[in-house]
Length: 208
Image (cartoon, rainbow, N blue to C red):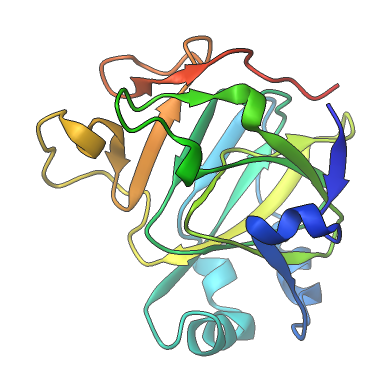
């Protein structure tokens, strides 16, 4: 599939590049985080949140709302699933990486399915900070090199933690997977069908 970059106009419906931050200290701290052969996601990391950029992002990007800074690292080449939040997500690419993105508006609300043919791919160069809009479907990044990927993930506090109350699996609640996290999985993802709604139709897209 064609891979755009986040500087291309095609990205503007999914998010935008954020300027005006010095990410050098944050990226350096990310070099101490694990880089497994699969994928690890940590919602909140105390060392990252101790950096000055934590307060800057709290005040400027989230308007004073409590936030968390965590990371998603590892090795991945496939779509596997798509998720969305009720809030924007900020990412900082510490390595080159590719995001596979879709639009929440393209979810079939009759069956809560999504056609993977609608997914678009975007290269996020190392050192780039982006906002991914709340209506943008996304999941774990894909690495562009054998060395894997590291990506900072900034979200409102407690996003992606376990649900305290699990609603009946009806309507959009079928997709509610964690706090502030709605997810549609591909049948080949390896996710538990009892927990994740298997609603992605078509190919489980892979990045070569």
